[in-house]
Image 1 (cartoon, rainbow, N blue to C red):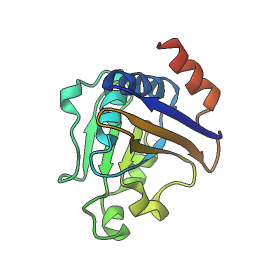
Image 2 (tube, rainbow, N blue to C red):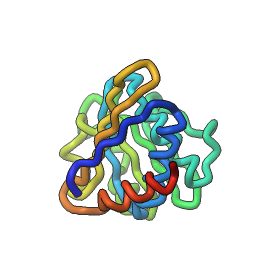
Image 3 (cartoon, one colour):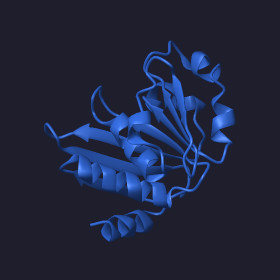
Image 4 (tube, rainbow, N blue to C red):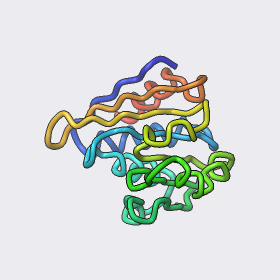
Length: 159
């Protein structure tokens, strides 16, 4: 997959993107999330999880607990590497068990633990472009676990 760009003008747009990702990402996908504090990384995870049947109110930032697990049609595992001292501390969380599971594994601040991540993964950069607008850049790393045309088609179906 080349790079896929998505502009979100509202939370409803982010929900549409989350639903499209939930529809096209195969179980077992690892997703690295990149972006500044408050960019909308957790908001995107909430949108994906909601599309998989997880109550939106159940999805919270794992900043202090380091990993949250959500039971939906596909399990969602949500890591946060922001407060970790180093990659060894991340490895102590047992991420390989999550990476090998049939769920979707999201890692906020993935750039802090990049060498611990699977070679094949999705990276999503979230960039605020205004108070309520965001630019999402989605890229497959190390292979093609999610085709751009499938994501684009899924989003078109949700307009």
